[in-house]
Length: 203
Image 1: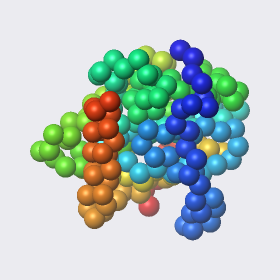
Image 2 (image 1 turned 45 degrees about the vertical axis):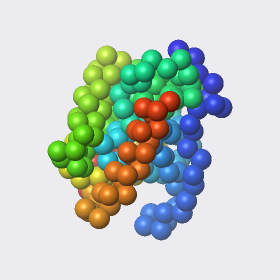
Image 3 (image 1 turned 90 degrees about the vertical axis):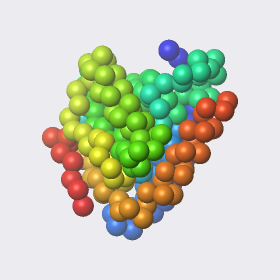
Image 4 (image 1 turned 180 degrees about the vertical axis):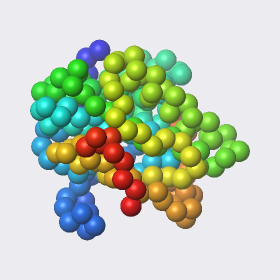
């Protein structure tokens, strides 16, 4: 599958992270970011899933953030919708990493998210489906999962350091759940309408 990287949802939002004292890239739902430079990539997850991929030989790494495993509508507009769905988000991220010099056989994966932040609500199965999808996809692509932190009931904030492959996870408090779920609901509604240097550290 071939993608025009200029037309997909590459994350562009940069901010200064005062905790780590450095500039960071924020990946929003339906976005991804790939780089061969040293970067701190950050995202916040509820039922969505993010995959951090890195080639430790070349140092090329990246992260995506998808909402659902696949487009059930069979939309022909794959590029426009791509990074919202796991099946396209993974293809896009992998292809862009290869374009930057990574080798697929070297890729190491770290996977996060898939929380059921509102048990009993209709969207509570989304996190489970996303988690099952990403494990199956990576297995079929023969990409090793080096670490994971999936499901549960708490949202997560993920910090990915591309130079080392290190990932830090911050579990968010209940106060963060309502705005996060509201944001994901809006994105999902919009869709329906149209670790070695790899251990996970909690802090």
